[in-house]
Image (cartoon, rainbow, N blue to C red; front, side):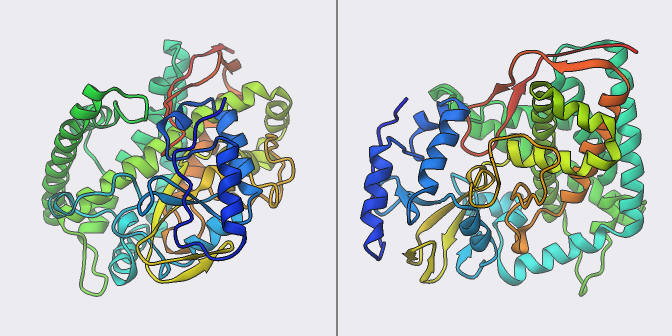
Length: 432
């Protein structure tokens, strides 16, 4: 199916290759700025990215003077990630960019920061993840996995998402942060309200309703985190909130607003991405029984490779945006300050120049330099290690306890240009 290309403008491109690249993209009917593109079946979108990777320079999508250049090759995405002085995260990595007033009220997320401001905040957070805290978290991950699967076997639910995939990372993050049980049901409900209309398929009424609901959810989270910050400053405990608000890194700790912004980031980076990777993992292991048998035959040997391959193949975060901060060259194109580029991780993780047979699912793939946790640089995911531990713990329980556990049908995906989100996934199993 072709999607009519709206614009593929030359912009500030330099060199003889740029015009031919853009006309080639237009001829293929590729328009990454069109909502219709993101409603296509995922294989069609991946085929479009494969075509864009054959071009000599990044292509511009959207209106002239606006829009963005698409970075689709592994090398370009990785290099842009490691050049924050040229490709800045500020004023925002998502679309639309967060408004200045929203940052002032709710705090700015680390993913939207650059330079000393980002370095200082990341330093505080990194110090809080002490070896003792991480060791306790890893043990907790295994306990949560056992409990979630215990309850799954007893209740025999039909949808993998609310019963397993969503519960596991949410409980781990709440335990890590030290969120009391009394707050958790309401926090989970607020998260659902904030994200229920995300995606390009939602209608006009939903689009109009979402900002208010999302802001109310953020405001509530801020109030909860402010209350907990005050409690932990008075009576610190062995949790991440205490470590963050009582830290003394160059005389600084997180204030309540920064804590709220960090918790909101954890809910996306630590919960949403992991839940989606877990769901895609179950679907992939169902569709590739030979890979499942290999993983189950020697789990400890293949677990790390399986987790990395699930993340590469599914790529939970499709893209992040950057703003060109200084005139620079990348991928055969000269960029000018103020222009936007989009780092398409979903394309980079299928780059034929890096991955042999990139569309295949292979738990023994090595090396596997996927960009599922970012392309390196100062914004590489702080929670990558924890996410891997969660997936390993859950799939160990799922592959060794119930019999014939499998996805039923295909995942119900949300039409989104931001994340590879699973709305629902039917599954079945037999008790041992």
